Image 1: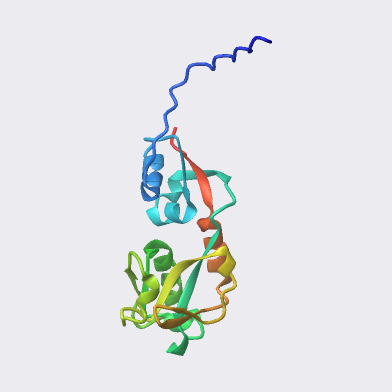
Image 2: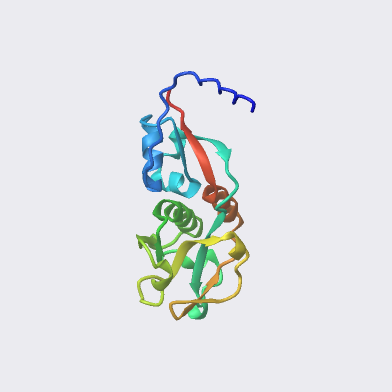
Length: 182
């Protein structure tokens, strides 16, 4: 019986693994507390620390699209028509930037109210909390242009929003991050 080969001993390292909630990873990477993290790009953008983080490797799974949706019977046909209205979302930073641009472009009388809803964003319109929502949809729903019934409130996507789609499709992929601090 042949003798098993011994494996070479790897050089000594001080590498440790830490499991953190996805929303905490951008902060710890940006502060330099950890050297490398894996989290969603949407989480990085929402942390408002994306300027301190460098994407090393798109992992090419978890692809989503941030989408603006309104009730089917709302009468809203374009993104500009939502200027000055109430928007519910779990993505305040991205939605806030988007609607700030919309408000400026259409010279809205009042700013669009972007309000945080932690879950069940799709229920906000049915409950009278919002005129529209901004939420992630899976890659299979990327071209969602037909009504979808969620919480007994049929919603439809506003389209096209190409600038938002390209920016947020990129932001929704999972990615490795590395602090740019030395």
